[in-house]
Image (tube, rainbow, N blue to C red; front, side, top):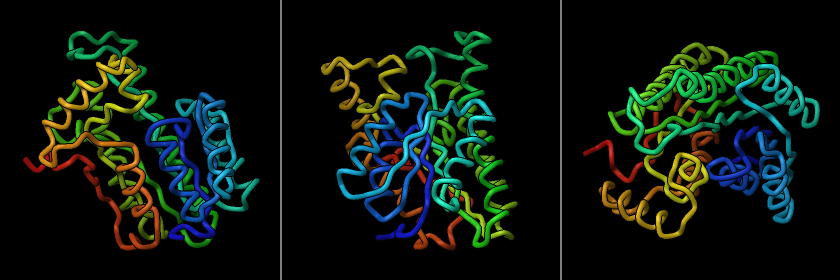
Length: 259
């Protein structure tokens, strides 16, 4: 029970890494606010948490809107008493599979920045304010990407994840005197997630399996990355076992960036 007595928010908790992490946080004793723009999917995650004996709350939230982030954190504090963990997990992919820099429209660019960077900025900003109002600090975890560590993936998407990484490091340093930790997960290819489906892969089983084989071949350990892989790393980083770890960009990539 690594997170017993902790209160957490997970954004994008309706699917993928968000759902897997919300379930793992709850299994380790946390009470979890499951936020998603698709609130029905968040409710499904909460139902799974409750079926396993945990506590979950579903909240509709568009993380690209600052007021909705402030309302989300206020709801968590009102319902649970305090906030201990914020997992800024939401992200959107390059709008068309294989799109290069010059293929992006102004609207593509603005959406990627608004969701991938804006949501993390708003989440960190208001979580830090809440943590400073409390005693005992708190923990922020952001979802970055190997695409923000090396030249892999669409250029604009990679740039937004690079911004997430720098925000994470800066929040870690600024928050350290107040007992606030901040780290980021940096997954490699995850063909079995809704994120990849919306990025152009689709949900055709044969396409997904081809992508899984291709992804696995790029990873030294020979396996694609799963949402559950990320959730296991997330549990550790937000727990007290990582009490002296902050400012870290942790690749969950089967050894990809070590090549």
